[in-house]
Length: 225
Length: 232
Image 1 (spheres, rainbow over the protein chains, first blue to last red):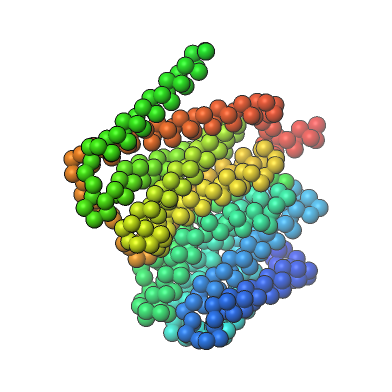
Image 2: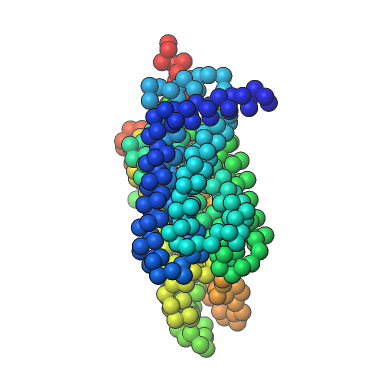
């Protein structure tokens, strides 16, 4: 067990170190996220006010695009210089590799969210202070499910020529249940002043469990150098 | 004609005949619904198509799992054929549903749970076809689409549950009189026969194409074996 945890820590540290030294992804993805918020803010007429609760949907668009770019990046670093082949012949379980990639992706998405969310809050005049804890919980659960699916498919399609567009095409429709559930919860909390819906939270939890388990099982079959 | 062609012809004749029979039944033996009039009759096609959509999606799932398990190309061809028919049927469900909605609710589209669910289902399987079309390597395409076919099917109940969070105006149960029930039952036969026949025909075409391109030969073996093979 400790061995597995140490392997995960090593792999995650490797990914984050690469990102810290090259700074290829985070800057680009964060600016893209802010751009999305600005474009949609202008498009939805945020300057006239009264659209605060729409910020959650706008933030989702930013998270989705940013997430796909992160998934693609963490997998594509393995494509250079046969790194993936090296990783596969190393005595590391494939499930461990999946867990490490998932954690790397979650850390990167968290970093992006920490910049993009305040941007959305400010630009849309969104009153996050009504329920910041619930917002964090819902977004956290949603991101986990999104990243679970995204990490699996990033490993699958990163070898094809169309990697970028294809990954978004595949991951977006699969993630729709999460988007529907979390935006409905947010509307309930921030527009209608309700409490956290148990049913919607259940859908998010079920999505996480189903796709973490399915991805963990299938990752073994799909990883090829 | 050989025996196979005769059987195929007989199958499609029976399918066409049952379509005609079901259409006659709806035209002459069922009453017009009081408020919606003749548009209500679209329902006899709508429900069988919806149920056959689920069956086709289920077949995609089974064939995808079969491919990942055995890595035989015919599983992949079956999954591709089923997905194509699933998209066709789901398109019929969406279009008939929209015509119904226009008549019953006065709007072509509303984000009610079932409409949203059908739309997302349609998107999921359209993307499946797009994924297949955009990967060139046959083996890679088979693996990617098999994984996608499994994950998409696991996604279906979650889409259903999440769509239930939206507000509903779709009828959840409908009371039908005797002749309407008979007509509905009569429509299941041709729609199911047509769906099965289309999947079989598409599957045969996929097999023929694969054999023509000469890749129905044994699959390359998995990664570790290949690596050892390369080393030798």
